[in-house]
Image 1 (cartoon, one colour):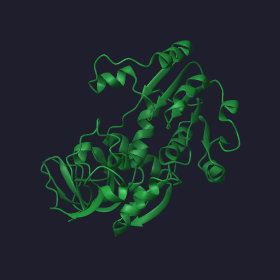
Image 2 (image 1 turned 60 degrees about the horizontal axis):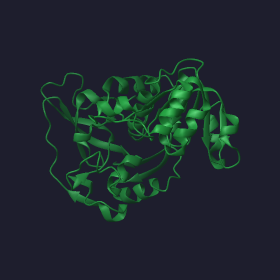
Image 3 (image 1 turned 45 degrees about the vertical axis):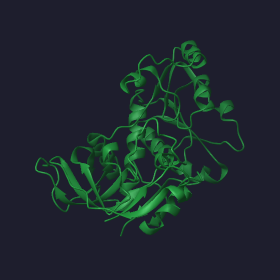
Length: 327
């Protein structure tokens, strides 16, 4: 079968290459999916660049991609939830990475049946950003009437998180560039801040939660913007001590300056490293079916143009998700 693989670390056009490999074999708890679409994510090109070598060890060549939708063509002996011919979608675990491929083997416990009111391409756009948003926001207990700032509202995670927070009944601030203001408002955000024209720190204050999707200085700034006993949930900042422990990092301590800011606000700070979760995928399916979540697609590329698709994604200009259609 044809696959797109990381063959070496470096620039995208040098590190990615189309190869032919054997069709994957499944275990008793797996299903084999004939891929209809694959969703691209920033973590993919960061892996190619070698930015995550210390956290994610790859045995090169390694097929790229985590988001998939398609049709079940084989099932393991222990699989009872799915039948041959079922349309499914999900985010594969790290040890089953490789969705930009004609077939994908994945543990049946981390996928869900595709909602029948969206296409395969739309379905494959949702797993990673949906699971990331849900896990990050639920970790800090997002609830009705919370005031939340979600950075980068036009990105994949941001566009899902806005819809999810509104579905929970929160008041949502978000940031985006001038050209994206109108369509980000259409996602449901209550206050859309054009960061090219306005200082978001002058508009947002004493919020309950900041969803830090950018890291760096934004993590520190988030702690200034929350109320006393407020919460910062991050997917791009530094590790918190609890997460470090979960990851097996012993003796980890937050940087003194960040720890001081947290203490001054009696704040909660959490970094989320998303994990595949079938139950949460089912929850995403339910929200899609009832119209609370709508997929946001920027551009759809053919399988043959997948390397070009990754090059576009890496520019950071995409509004929503960049997708690969296999059919």
